[in-house]
Length: 126
Image (cartoon, rainbow, N blue to C red):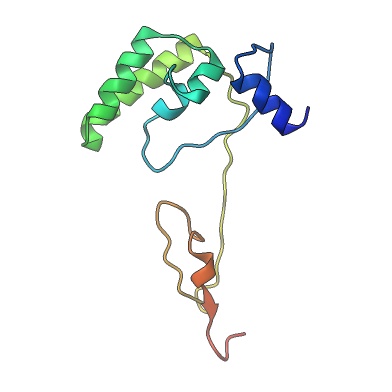
């Protein structure tokens, strides 16, 4: 099925037996945007768990990583126990850059090439 009809099916409230899509989370480890039952993705998974909702709320309300860590670990255990979705793979990405040639590289949590439009090769190193 092409993506557009698939998205209309999944997000339109139909419940196919199985479907495959990908998603990602941002820099914040909060899984709420994907698994909160009131979110678009949460409605698509069909997972309704009062404990999940409670843990997601607790994690989002805490600002310090040390305070959030045990909450998200408990949520991850719940996800593994109830298994509302099956993760097929997690994409690994390796980026390599020759630092003796490329200038302007500023890697951070977004990846090494997040600012690829700012990279340049020094004169004489081309």
